[in-house]
Image (cartoon, rainbow, N blue to C red; front, top):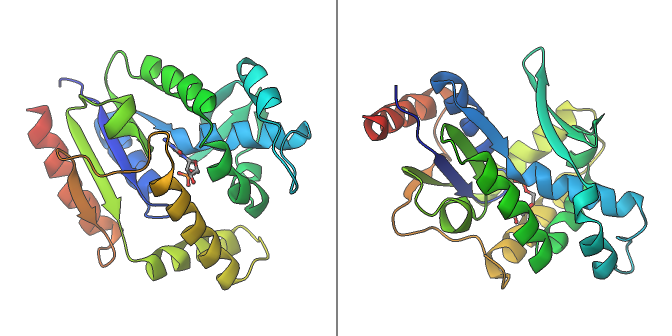
Amino acid sequence: MSKINIAIDGYSSTGKSTIAKLIAKHFSFTYIDTGAMYRCLTLFGMRNGWITDGEIDEPAICANLDKVKVTFGDSKGKSLVFLNSEDVSDEIRSMAVSQKVSVISQIKEVREYLVHLQQELGMDKGVVMDGRDIGSVVFPTAQLKLFITASPKIRARRRFDELKGKGVTVDYDTVCDNLQKRDSMDTSRIESPLIQTDDAVLFDNSNLSPEEQMRMLISLVQCRIS
Ligand code: DC
């Protein structure tokens, strides 16, 4: 079977990563979560005191980009994200990181650095990558581009349930507010904003079960491969 790159973009909490993981597993491709890369960099900046509630030390973040090594793994079916070899899979999904990551991902140097790493990861094809600028910037010639969307209420509910399931104490309105702010920052930023490219397939999964989504997507991928 020939290998292709699949670019998956879309709003926050649309289930992009679940879809991407399942497609990657089905076709034995490699899944890359680019949001996790931006989240790790944000966590690294927070731990070093460069990102606080008051201010963001952009020069310090940019001068230390190469000190952030993000790697992926899995254990018992759970995807893991490592920041400099430390498992930070849960910490990068905390509200504290979620509230800062969209600001950090607006920094030009941060984007250039991560986009370059992402392009290297996809050089040999066979990669399913999800994020906000994959079809537009990282892999503009990807053989399949998907733009995933779902209604804001459904997305907030999914995210709230996910956090609750992990034992995080958070209220629904905070989650809703965070999603709206991130959507707005991600779509309006100057540096590679979230857009649906002309050649991307729009996929609204508001009313689709995971099984229905997979059936539709697998046949779409099969078509592109052949
Ligand atoms: O996919 P996610 O929600 O984990 O992404 C976290 C943030 O990172 C998101 O609000 C925007 C940013 N991001 C980005 O700007 N570009 C990407 N390719 C992936 C994520």
